Length: 499
Image (cartoon, rainbow, N blue to C red; front, side, top):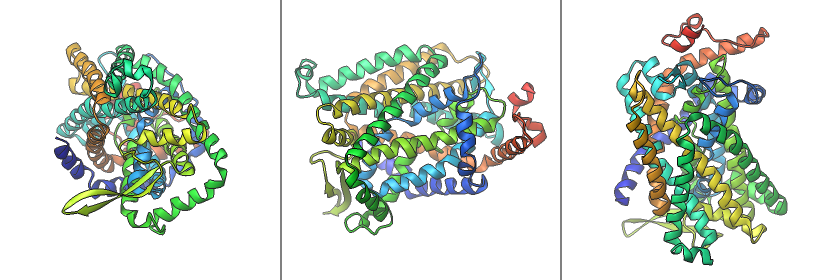
């Protein structure tokens, strides 16, 4: 089974997808005239303004929901995995993906706002399935994306997050009486999975408002706490910081004596984990973006572009600096021996830890500077990162289930099965091995990325028109409002009826 899944993953995550994501980000950066730089001040302003309504959430709540989806184990374990397979140079390519991805996020999230609609219960819904159908007119393509997203976010991806929670907690507990009382490592993982599933059930059965309220409170707190921890560790290791930056840049361009030989792996894993962490182009962010109450679609596009900066440039970078400044990471290269692929160690800072066990590298990094409680802090941070991501995944899956139901109210049985499915996969993922969990997660991310990036490359024009319209109104001193008819944008029914 693992070999089959690995084969499927290899096809989906070929160099073609990596080139597509990088190319799309570069293209959108040019087409938006580098809006992620020009509009940075506006991004920050819009993030803390806005209002909510009975139908939608505030811009900040929409940001919190999308950040809940973006800031998962990719920010902690995923960064460590990228360094394990691509060396320090992978960090540079994660930065590149983050910078370019901000413009990609603007395009997809603005499209989600333009083509959003109200569901049978009067709540805003939107996302790739909605804009693919309305702007492209390809119902079969939209349905394909919706089905892929329900499977990916409802079944494949939650297990990755739950597995990281269980692994990091077990790493702290095992060796204590509590671990033995729970039945050893295996039993501890199972009980942790059950506990996470129980808390998740309490929140997702409360709907989008409860999800938004929880995310709005937890996401900023957990992110800032983790960043402060990373800054503290860097200050205590200040003497190693110059060498760390030298390793990142020399490895990224193949100039490092040890890591230069794996420049291809650095690019591939930097981009791959960059997409996994910030989700730009993957099609997950637009679901939360569509739920925001705004007067102009570009407003939420700006806010979601800022989300990529915050996720990659602050949170992911914090993890990378933790690992590299302490030397608590391993790096491997793939070699062929007797016709079989195997991993050969280039650098070993944490003996015995495998690339798929990324959270343990971060725990070792903090523990090396703050012994006695570093591993526990990372386990707690990882719980909040991963749990809020699972919560956001449910919202994305529910939104696509609503799309598939059409004008009718989603059948209660379908919603119940989705909730039970994601809860069950949390328990399954927590108990099973990390390598399989990561493979399933990568397949889910890759499927969505292929379908969504191709769609937004075709559909970019309305989002670019919205950007120009927003900037024009701002120059006139107005609070921009949106009129799709004036811009010649068809099928933006929500905005036409609203006006």
